[in-house]
Image 1 (cartoon, rainbow, N blue to C red):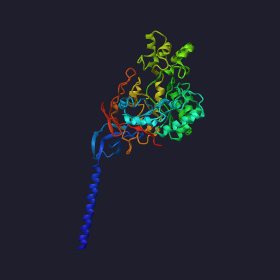
Image 2 (cartoon, rainbow, N blue to C red):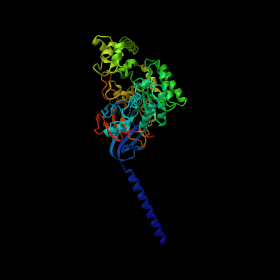
Image 3 (tube, one colour):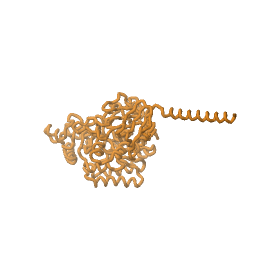
Image 4 (cartoon, rainbow, N blue to C red):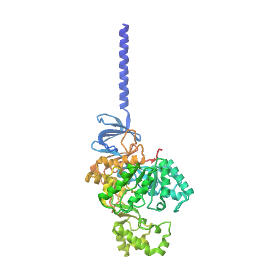
Length: 514
C-alpha cells in the first residue's frame, strides 16, 4: 500500500512538473514583442545568401530572428513582409548637413539611409569641446543616426595654427590634444580636406602626427585627398597610405577626374590592393554620378583663395587669374560642364551665364561669382571607370550629399544603386549592393551594433521590393525624394511608412566605443 501511494505521489509530482514546464514554455512564447516582420526575405548585410525569416523587435533592438516562419508570436504590431526584402538600414559614410538646422533629413530617410557620417572634408563644428555640440544634437533628436568625425581643417583653425605653413611644435601639440579630446568624446576618427583651405597647407609631417593620434584612439582617417585629377590621383593616394602606417585610412568619394576606362580604374585599385598586402587597412567610398559637387573655389588658384585678399588679387594679378581660370575650366571639359548649384545663377551652366551676361566665362567667375560666391556640379568623370571602382569589394557607397545641395546624389544615391546597378544593369547583385551600403560601412567605421541583421543589434531596418525603388532626383530637379522603400525603421521605431513620415524623430547621436 505504501509503495503504491509513493508511486502515485511520484507520478503526480512528475505530472505537475511537466505542466509547469509546458506552462513556462507557453508563457515564453507568449512574450509580447513590439514589432513582428513576418516572412521577410532577409539580406543581412554580410554578403551571405538571403533567407526567409520572421524578425521580432523589442525596444530599439532585434530580439529574435526565426527561420521557422510557422511559429506564432504576440506583437504590438505585425507587418506581413512576405515578398519583401528586409535589409539593414543604409549607412552613408560621407554625408553633409546640419542636424541642428535640418533634423528631419527626409532626403536620407526616403532612400533608406538610417545613419550618416558628418564632419567631412576636414570641416566639423567649431567647438573646442565637441561633446557640447553632440549634446545639442541629442537634445534635438535627429531623424537619422549621426556618426561624427573631427575635421582636420577645423582643428587647425581652433588650435591657432590657422594658415601657418610651418606650425610650431607647440601649436601642433595643441591640435593633437584637440583631436584626442574629440576622439575621446566619441568621434569615429578624423577627416581631411586637402584640396581646401586650410587643409592644403598641411604637409606630411603634420598629417602623420595626426594619424598617430587617430591610431592610438583606434579611429579612422577619411580623406578628401589633395588632388583627384588623373595625373595626380596616385600621388594623393600614396600620401594617404603613408598615414595608413599609423591608423586605418579611407579614400573619400573615390574618383579619377579626367581618367577613362576600366584599365585606368584597375591601375588605381591595384595601388590600394598592394597597400593591403603590406598590412595597411585602406577602404574607399563612391557615389554613382559622373559629376562632382563642391564650392566654385575649386576652379581658382590657391593664391586667389583665403587667406589671400581676393580684391587685391584682382587689382594686381587680374590677367594671370583670367588665364588660369580659362585654362582650368577648359581642362575640366569647358564651361558647359560646370552647373552652378547656388547663388543667383543656380541651375544654369557657366556657359549659359556667360551668354546671358555677354562676357567671357572667366570674367563671370572673377567679377560676378568669385571664389566663394557659389557651388557647382562638375561633369568631369568617366562612367566606365567609376563603375569599375564600385565593383571592388573594398569600395562602399556614399552620397557626399545633403538636404540642400543642388545635386541629385543627396536624394537619389542609394535608390540609384538598386534601380540602376542591381535591377537594370546587373552590375551588382542585391546581396553585394546591400553589403556595400550597410555591413561594409559599419565594419569600416567600427559601428559595432549596426549595419547587419543580427539578434542583439540595433533595429535599423528597411523593407522594400527592389523592383519598386526609384531614384527620381535629377540635375535639373535634384530635390525629389526617392521612392520604393515601404518601411524605414530606426532604433525600433517606424519612421517612414509608404510616403508618410513619422512626426517622431528616432535617430541618435552615436559615439564610438573605444
